[in-house]
Length: 119
Image (tube, rainbow, N blue to C red; front, side):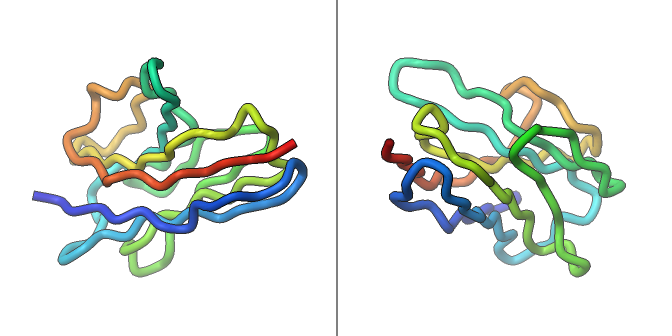
């Protein structure tokens, strides 16, 4: 059972940057693919970025995903934030190792962290 804890959300202005963290509690992310999703009320969770078991991250024009060397924390660096980026951001982990863009592909989820971008 993997336990994930997100942090780093908050209220920022358009154009600002924010870094979210997803910490593995009591274990590491070794062998896991980890992804960030976001969700606004009434909508499905939307894939943002993912990093594979081998450390290969997917691409986003304004965001980057990374993992620390100890494989205990995965980061989501968000730059040039826009009001439409406002959402609850969740990290998710899968022991299968490859990045999947569908929420059902992940077995473990954090509790989410709120990001609000004001215009």
